[in-house]
Amino acid sequence: MLPRAKKVLLNWIIASLLLTIIFIPVFLANSIPSGFDKYIVLRSLGDAFFAGAAATLLGTVLILIGRSGLFDTAAFGFVVFGENFRKDGKHKYKDAYEYKTRQIERRNVNKPFLLPYLIIGSSALVLAVIFTVLSFLLISK
Image 1 (cartoon, rainbow, N blue to C red):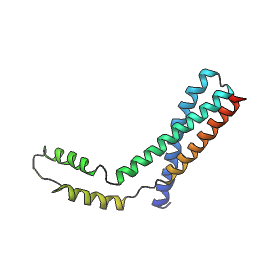
Image 2 (image 1 turned 180 degrees about the vertical axis):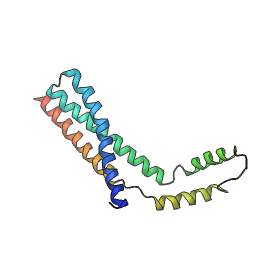
Image 3 (image 1 turned 45 degrees about the horizontal axis):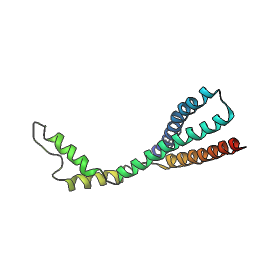
């Protein structure tokens, strides 16, 4: 299998596992106390899918924000702070600009594959809305 195909497959598996790991405890925590009542189960499905979708989509957004370079100045401050404690006194970067340009070069080489997280998170969000609407429709009857 090609390295790119492995990376794509691994991202799909991780996105699915992330949603599942969040979905199962939320669903069971809401459904077990009620004895799996049909109204509660529908509401619990909506809650569980929403929790998984929120984690998946917010994680993706945070990755995109971090890759935009928003935190580069703060990260450079931590790097310089750590380098001040080195015995040899060498600094890896001479200033924040050099640090930022190297980070941009590194980001251009290592691009993440975030499509699975967006697709699975969006699908879970749609399912959350559907189950929530269904639970309200059944309760109102």
